[in-house]
Image: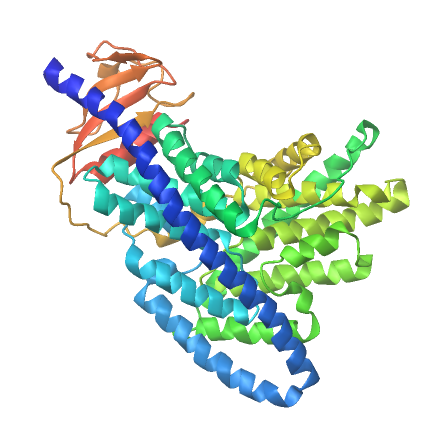
Amino acid sequence: MSESNVSKIYSDLNKLKWSVTFKGILVGLFAGLTVALYRLGIEFATEKSLEIYSFLKMNPIYIVGWLILIICVGLFIAYLIKISPESKGSGIPQVEGVLLFGQKMKSIIIIPVRFLAGIISAFFGASLGREGPSIQIGACGGEIIANKLSNNKLEENYLITAGASAGLSAAFNAPLSGIIFSLEEVHRSFSPNILIAATTAALTADIVSKTIFGLKPVLSYVDVPQLPISQYLWLLPLGVLSGIFGVIVHRLLLGSGNVYEKIPAMFRPMVALLIALPFGLFLPQVLGGGQNLVQLSETAQMSIGLLLIVLVCKILFTTTSFGSGIPGGIFMPILSIGALLGSLVAQLGVNFGLSSEMVSVFCICSMAGVMAGSVKAPITSILLMAEMTGSLVHLLPVAAVAFIALLTSDLLKTTPIYEVLLERLLNPNQTHTKKKSNVIIEMVVELGSEVAGKQIKDIQWPNGLLIVGIRRGDQEVVPNGDFVIHHGDYLIILSSEQEYQYMNTVVSKLCKPM
């Protein structure tokens, strides 16, 4: 390839940086508005579900009518999932499948199905959160805008990533978490262009969200005390327990899906809504995502016995709701489980010298720990706690518990839950229609990868791959076979549209730690 062509590629990449910046703002506006509407719908429906079950408990004669309604709604949700299988469950594995393996999303269908199925399920109190669907709704917005304004495959991926970041940002008023989530969980690597796209979209979506919902944090903890250094030893058992419960939730969520596979698909949502009925009548605290449980746990309004009962029931209810495939996320239910666990440990600890004022600190720490143990995205978990609570005074103990929980989860040989869900979604025989002739792949070389420290000629590259440039810091190099690749280098690869996904997958494996 001539130097003029290589220079043009670098020039195009530089233009791409500013293109994704401005288009990321549009993605953030779209995602912020749509996710805010979805969030309003979910919150309204969850509040109404509490009123409905309270009425049914006082007037049990109407339960028969409610059962008939459950059957009809369950069949309707199953129909929605049938016409839009990509809307099933969380939505995060579907987004990762698009970005990492070239799967397709029918964005125009997914958004209305997510709205309908998610809000209807919330009226019946399903124990599901809004964050996973919000991430997919945002990603769909990014794809829609990319299809209208871009003819570049790389830029399309950046805008889908930007939409995912904006979705999480708007769902929780947490722009930093949205940005880091894209790098830590979705791509699992760092790229300046991904960072730029995610940042502009997440911040824009946050502005939209705060305009609608106000500046108050989602979990407005007040006067969170600092944990004294003398009591830091408590973080070790709290981190281990958080990791263990994260693993328990992880395995039950996946196991419930296996159980539901034995039930015909059209009946699965119906079964989940039927299971919600006794919980709604006798333990309404576990209904919905669980934001109310977080507040109850933090203020220590439940006894140790009731905390234990609610904790077990919330875990079981969440796994039965999620395993059915009903469109809904697991972030908030996992956080509520963590808050319950933290409150339980803190109240038990009071008998052994722990100050009762530390309950809120333990709740926040355990939320991050359970999430890190199951999702295995510790940085996102830590930042999410800081943004959702609006306080940084507990950042060190939160980080300690998150990493202790992550270590516990690793020792128990737990695979990240979204990685397992993604593997279940992937279809290796799936083919896609390609419209463009050539695309550029940008890949970062990570420390400990197979290619780091080797000459280009000594690496077994896939047939047909063409490395047209390497970016090292501010330097842009046109390499030859003797060029030694260092970790931190960005490989600029030219691929045909037909080979894009194959090249992207193979090179990604070469550039990641062995």
